[in-house]
Length: 154
Ligand code: 4NP
Image (cartoon, rainbow, N blue to C red; front, top):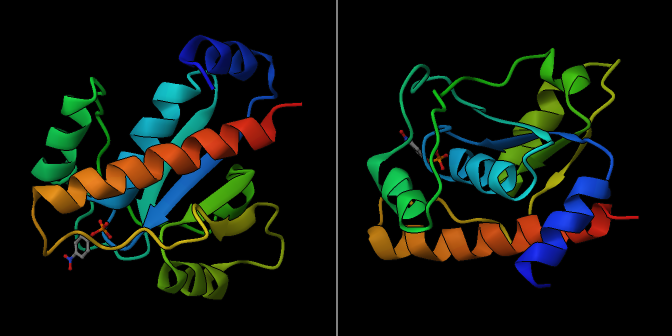
């Protein structure tokens, strides 16, 4: 879809509240948050980790560099998923199946959010890899976000 057409369709669609989730909230999910927020500026988009070890930190420098290469900025600080997220967001998108299992264990009875994978192919953890792995997940995440937006369009 041409970018101007995507922007028009995005402006017409209902505002969605979307939470992107990975393990540490410093590599994959802050990248997914920034890409979706860039494509759908009216949506409420956030990210969080199933683990809390990196809480308060900026995204990994390789995530920041890859976003910068595409002209996308972020001011996200890592945080852990909390129970309130299951009612605050419409859609919670996990990067991999382990994240999804961890989210299902945390899900409270009154959860209203839909839980699923961002992409049917898991977004692989790039933490122990190089810049190429971050470029590859960017491409995957960008494609998955564009598909999400076209599915959400009436
Ligand atoms: P993320 O990547 O889940 O995509 O943020 C990771 C970040 C940190 C660690 C593992 C994965 N870690 O082991 O600290």
